[in-house]
Length: 489
Ligand code: ADP
Ligand code: LRH
Image 1 (cartoon, rainbow, N blue to C red):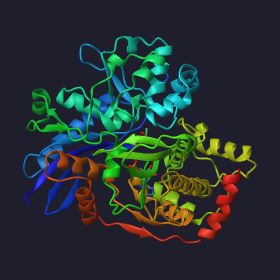
Image 2: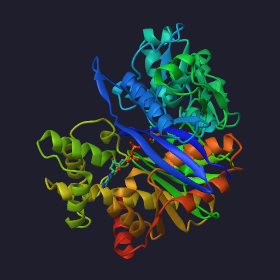
Image 3: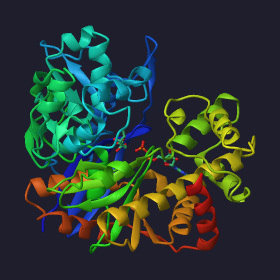
Image 4: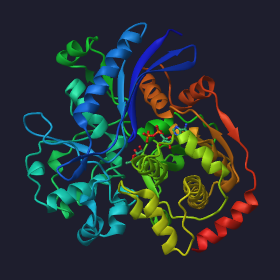
């Protein structure tokens, strides 16, 4: 078969990259042409994204990718983290820098929402896990504060689609990303009238929902000229990075779960139909839309954010250690020194994470630590125990035992955590690819342009294209002992 190339733009909360994906002879080759840092910026006392810089980095990356490609790329796909959005005025411009989901304006907003529509009803409608960062609570916070920006809004566009909008001029709300908002009715795949009415939110600002695989439109004349590349079409991929990551998992057969490991740990299974019942409500599972008519039944776990924020604090204190160095120190620290509940809301906002973790340890009657390796180790162990708990809950909800855990994303570079995940869960772990998200982004474009038939073929390509690493469980009885104490607390 002939060679085809695609441009994948993939932005995570910590870094963004533009990749050139080339498919030939049943293999995918990814070349990173541009990478840039990302993170919250403080504007007028609130946490935002530096959208102008991100857009300019994306444009630079697309220009580089187009120059690197052998022929003209067949598409550009953009994916980012979920829930965040920009507000567009009637003049077509961004009204203000988009808020970061860790901004404190959503504190207490879930309770305000539940007074207007019951928690169980919101869940029945959307199937989405309750997190204060969900778009629903962000929009409610703005409405309750009589936000002038919201009043001026013509369209609300989610982050990845906002980047696409500034590339091709088309307004759309890609389905997988729209689902993360907790404002979409899972039964219809449309904006939930019930939620917008009961919470008094403006449904008319919401973009039309389109399915991944939709060819949206070419780069505008201006953008193509300024970047210096042909009018390549923008293709809606799984705009939610986790949706693209799940397409890029090399799973085969039925009995595997995935863990997309980066700033967040997203752990779950791919299923044909949403499971929205008392059990998934109690466990706090989310049913996010997946590509090709799948559902991602998963749990958002706080993830390596905890390590990122420890690292940043130590850097502020004058000790700039790399992730590799921190992991190395952790590997030499005492096992099972302490356990934290990683998903505690105290850990959500940026700040002095080591102090908060020590406070949490003290409050739960455990010794504290100033040792960096010890701190990182207890975070990694706590995450691994959370993975076990989540896998058991998934098996309980679906009734299907899991054989293999596939870990993908930048977090697989933390080999200690991969081993802990195997040890804690007692499952075989297969790690890779690191760039599952960019892979899924490219593969979805290949499906959209008719080069691939569907998910199975896409995953076969992933299996052929990347080196995967296996971790076998060790010491699982010691972990089980620890787990039993953890679940009692
Ligand atoms: P996101 O997409 O959320 O921005 P990534 O998927 O790129 O995040 O994963 C980044 C994370 O991977 C880092 O926060 C860090 O915890 C982990 N990581 C990256 N490189 C290494 C390394 N060399 N050793 C250990 N962990 C690493
Ligand atoms: C991971 C992610 C996750 C959540 C969070 C806000 O990057 O997309 O799935 O939606 O960011």
